[in-house]
Length: 239
Image (cartoon, rainbow, N blue to C red):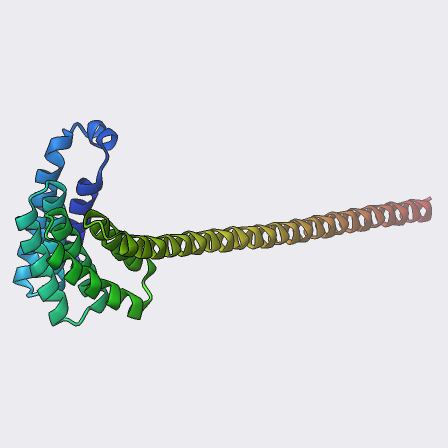
């Protein structure tokens, strides 16, 4: 709907690179202001329609802006609002993402007790749902916290798990790429086979047309020869 369009445009501005913004004659420091304007439009529509999912998406996207600007208290408020909305709809994957977001922000604030709480909840949910990228991010942040606390045993434990998850994600992406290339290869073969069969069919049609034309010409020639023979006979009778 219209609200999703505003969200998509806002996200595009949020993630736009400096080179893209320069081509649009937009200063890089203005991109978040423009993104907020689109998020505000989406929020108006979401509120009007009482669509808690749209409102949660707005909260999360604004939270990401606040986090990037290091406005951590504001980011926490936005992520908490998104978490509440997603929980009310039992959207578990999104709930886990907000837990992860909160854990990451609390880590940035050096509030490790809260960060550990949210990260472990996010990790537990991600394991249940088998969401590798969330597990990877949770392990990475947990490792970082224990490193900051000089708890190197746990730091190593979680970093090793992070590496396992990262490798699994890379392997999955490689497998997807192999599958995609295999599909393209098989599609290319089928496409070439189709074009070849079409060419053969067209050649046959042309050959059939040429044969028909030849037959027609031969028949026409025989008719003319017969006509000439008949005329000669008629002339001979007159003589």
